[in-house]
Amino acid sequence: MSVFVVNCGSSSLKWSVIDVASGSTLGSGTVQKVVDHAAALADVLSVAPLDDVVAVAHRVVHGGERFSAPVLINDAVVAAIRDLSVLAPLHNPANADGIEIALKALPGVPHVAIFDTAFHTTLPPRAYTYAVPRAWNVRRYGFHGTSHAYVSREAARVLGRPVADVNVIVLHLGNGASASAVAGGRSIDTSMGLTPLEGLVMGTRSGDVDPALVLHLRRTHNLSTDEIDAVLNSRSGLLALAGDNDMREVQRRVQAGDRAAELALDVYCYRIRKYVGAYLAALGGADAIAFTAGVGENDPVVRARSLAGLQRLGIEIDAARNEAGETVISPDRSPVAVLVIPTNEELEMATQAAAVIAR
Ligand code: ADP
Image 1: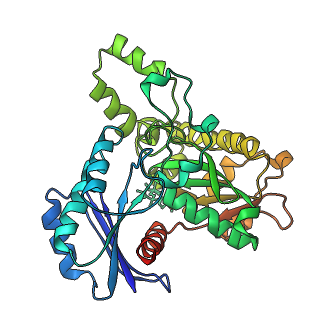
Image 2: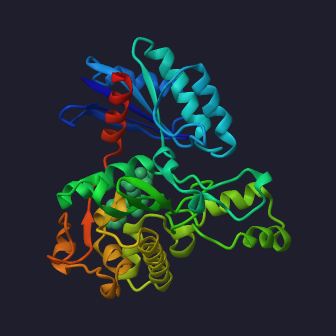
């Protein structure tokens, strides 16, 4: 029994076929620079091992307030995903296009939508409410939910304790990056907000800025809304500070004595440390801090610098374990376990889709 997992982005199509029982990947691939989604999917269907596929799982970025769990896709669901495009103009239209094309190409199996926002629908009002007029009807949602769900559960497994008994801070540091505070398996706070722009410093996104920055840019630089959007989402973060959005290249420049890259790394890690402090307070203490995604899984320098100086809070990293990238990188009997847990969003999506069709 396998699930065909599809992540149809604006310019790429990522796919994999996952055997749910064993968790193994039977096939996977990425088509970059996609112009024609239908043609790209047709190519994928000709090579993907689809014989035992019982469901198609589609990643959808924004589920708004409408979707708090995975759902079986029908016309109304696709229409609702399109309606939410105003909150995710880059992602939701591409996600909906991908779904419609796949529905036509694979009509014989159920299709399930998995939302990046769903895991965070447990946020309490105090965490999701912006202090702005209610009539605006805006709130924080949070993203990367599939990863935060998977990694927080894995953290409990590594600790050998029931999910319901542990508090975990998850640091998902990929090209996009977000932190979450997970209490007993429920997300109670997360760093991304109405859109994925809020929070940590990312490859090309600024993360937190004073919202008046936008007004300032309009007034003094005469920039349009679309220009400001493009700069904050695509030309900020590490790219703006260090000249490259890839942390490997930033680290190379730091090694070579590049002071801009050094500052970028410092800003990046300091932002993470502040969120860790905030989430320790939100949770009233954590059992584990889990690093995941491209940077979190592979960069010992970022891990060490992000948690430096937190010994008084029970947080410490063992240098040798960190360098080796072991699963537990804190010293034995450290009050807060620091973990490196590879995320597996495809497996999580396949598992969730299988659960939906079994209902
Ligand atoms: P995405 O967020 O696109 O899903 P990933 O989670 O795979 O992507 O993260 C991609 C990022 O991870 C890259 O942009 C790169 O900066 C970073 N990365 C990958 N490998 C390493 C490494 N060995 N050291 C530091 N950073 C890395």
